[in-house]
Image 1 (tube, one colour):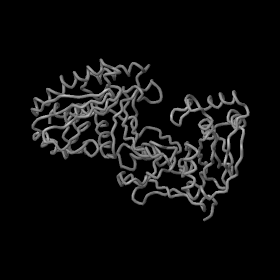
Image 2 (cartoon, one colour):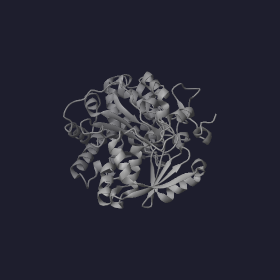
Image 3 (cartoon, rainbow, N blue to C red):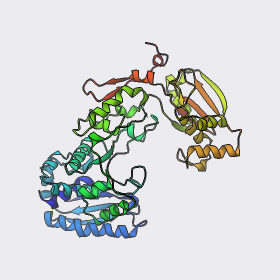
Image 4 (cartoon, rainbow, N blue to C red):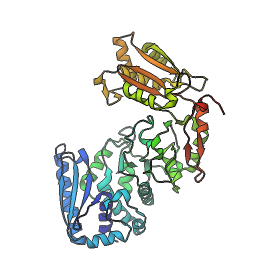
Length: 465
């Protein structure tokens, strides 16, 4: 192993795609709009120069492989590698890297990381990964431009790869800021009927940390990192995972928690925080004590119903009809003034609950307001199912035009979801009901950090044993 091979291996593992041909493979650079020659011709020119001036000589000198490239308007680039691949394949197989399909979906880094004997080799390997799968889009930030992020992005269900990459970054003192796991508890926290949750992983590192301890070889990536860092007003220190406070918010229970593509260690579990996954996977850097502190409050952190499900009224009716617990309810149907809900919202605190059967149960007023904004919005005021601008401002605007505006509510006899309808749209809102929900949760017999949630029943809602 040397620094040039370490870099090429990172590049190949990060973006390598192997087909049936014996003398050619591709390296995909998923730069999308960032690398588009239509949107940024100067950057596209720089990328082509990086490929031919940096990558091509390395492949030629080490493996006698010829390199060219192709790209598209969208910004996706392919490095085409042609020649006798025997030596390259043999070298990769020494580290249990099988040259089949899209490597990062199934590759393990364990052996190759063990061969990276010093920080310089590690940084060069990481640079290869960064040049392929690390996004420097300035939208990858922590809430505001003040904390810019480098985001390693992976598709598939290779949780092991993500863990091994995280450990590798730790070993060079480049502490990850967050991992967005490819799991429904992180990609669709509010709506269990949302099926497009498989959006991949994002391993995020603060750009200050990465510029100090990580590496890139492409000049285009280095320039982009410096441009993003200028958006900050100050530098930021990374905090080790064990020292981080863990704050969790409520998430719904999604049927895909049992998806067969998830690894068995993860499958069947419900996760309260991204570091909760780390604890279940046994990472030495996980904040185990902080995760355990969440468990007594689990009734406030999980919801077996949708927290907020927005759709056409037709689709909402189909959801209700397909679920016996929702279908068999007696509903009180009432028309209610939007002004009355709005007044309660602006004159109350955010924790107000409506239509409950106790002081700690009912439908959160904030979700009701968001649901109202969706169903009263004009089509041009929506971006998908999200109101453009703030939901409070949208409701204000419509009340200014029509103070008598009203919607229809269906209030169930038990605390199944509240139903809002108007304008051909519908919303399901799950109740806050912690004393009932905590009874649904158990700890897996094989892992003290893995929480499992059973389906809720009518007996649970009636508080029958």
